[in-house]
Length: 199
Image 1: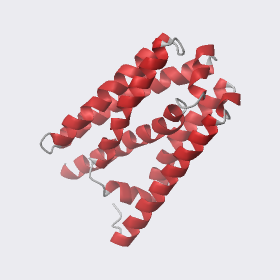
Image 2: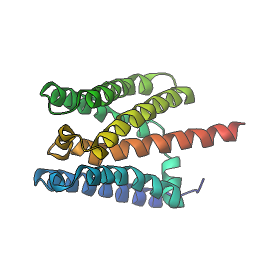
Image 3: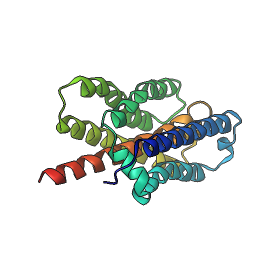
């Protein structure tokens, strides 16, 4: 792991926060203006995939950024997932209004709800690498199921999936999903590296 100076760590932190903020604002404005609704569903699915792969590519391709992430406490890569509780409630609401396919709502909402609720016990339980393994493996599994279902339905151009391109729910697949998936991958990579050092 690359050792970074305190000033360098602060600089990377500021750059990361600014990038995430710009990303979120851009998605919010774009969805509010209806820009993403103009995309065919397969192209929208491509945007979601880019949102997932871009931060992961940065992590593995930029040694300084990777060194910064690997210097973080795992709590920082875990607490963010509290956002999945309101995301789950949004999925349930849209599903109750018959605005999204029932299978997608079931696959996305329940896993997000459980993952979000698990954050607090993970943070307060005694410090152990295993609690992070359990949380991030569960979260990643849910992520694969939910995103896989969404991308499949989008590629099949299921009409009800067009709802995810509208404001405000578009913030979930185009913003939250990318950061969530990336944070799981980064956390699991960090855990694997730490365990490898032990053995």
